[in-house]
Each structure stands twice: as structure tokens, then as C-alpha cells.
Length: 267
Image (cartoon, rainbow, N blue to C red; front, side, top):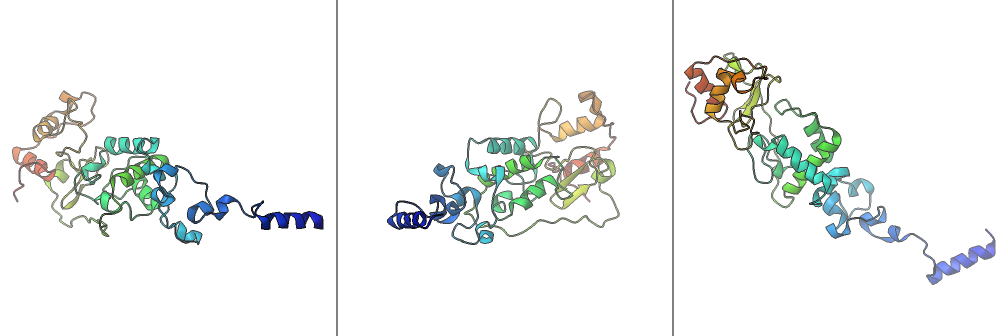
């Protein structure tokens, strides 16, 4: 560049006619690196979390939310709609409390979702612990669920710092459920996991309002419906591969009690 041209540019910069840096670079916080969007939803950290007051990238991106998970503040967005649908379809509330509703057999997600890293949340959905059903979701679906959980949970309420761990009992005497049903089914009860099978559906929360209405006639499961089903499954659903399960009245009472029925199990 000719000396005269360089001097002219320097003079224009000093006079304010030209900007030495882009407007985006002169903004503070997230706007110094990223183009702003969805401004009506509030500040960047309202959607993406992070630490907007930090200058170092590693600190600014603390517990950052990206992709579909960051769409939790868009009430009509596709990610939130899909997340809501998946939570209902997969009956996540049969074990978890979400949006103040659900059973408390596992972690109350309202109280921990804002404290966990996005990668950990996605991983726990796609590759769950032993007692949680494997739904075969892809990453986009898992992020949609995370978006819904973030929308339902409150970042302002006191956060529990616990993690729930269950261990199987060491008793050599199998329970009524384990003897008759545990080879194909499993469920998470108040005392921990019972059963070891994955062939049949996970029966956690079977008699609660949060379990899918999969009883014959697309109804909620009751003790009577379960007894009829076990007696002759194909009488209600001729395509099922489940054989009849012959239980005595006492065995049936014990199984239903373990699954959360109204009868209290006697020793």
C-alpha cells in the first residue's frame, strides 16, 4: 500500500469515518464473538447458559447449551414440541418428576436438569443406566427431550445435589415377581430394581397415572386388568407372544403388591 493511502486511512479512522473493528467485535460479552439472534427471548445466557461476564472462552462457555437443547425458551419451536411428545410417549414420568408431575422412583429431573452438563444429559438418555429403558433415541431426539426438561425445570429453585444409585439385594430367595415375571420384565420399585429381563416392557409405575395406557382396550392398568391378562394374554391380544402365567391367589397378590398395587405384601 502506498504511504499516502495508508496515512489517509489512518486519518479517517482517527476521525471516526472508518471503524477499526467490526461492530460485533466492539460489543461486550457473547456478542463480541457471536451474531445475536432471537433477541426477543432475552440475553444470550437465557437460552445458552454459560457465563456472560467472562472474557476467556473456557469460562464463558461453562455448562454451555447448544443445538436443539438451547431452544428451550422457544415455546412454539419444533424442538420443544418434539421433546414434549417424546416425554409423554415414552412415559418418562413413570419414574421421574418432570414439571412437578410424576413418580419419585428415580431422580427428580426438575431439580437437577439445570445443574448438569448437556453432554451428560444427552448421554443419560441415549445410554441409560441399567434400570432405565433403552429407547434407541438419536442425538437430535435426546436434545429435544433436554430442551423440554429445561423448560419444565426451574433454574431458580434450590438444587438437590444428589444422584440416585440402586444396588440389587443379595437375597438368594427370589421374590414372587422374579420367579414368575422377572425373566422377561423388570421394574424400579421403592426398594430398587426388581427383575432382569428386557424382552417384555419395563413395568415401573404400572398402576400409576403416568404409565402408558397399554392394558386391553387401551386402558390404564389395574390389578383386575393385570390378573385377567396373566390368566390368558391371547384372549385380550391374539398377536402377543406372552404365554399364560399360572399364579395362585397368594402369588398374584404378592406380584401386584410388588408392582405398587393396593395390597400390602405379607412375609
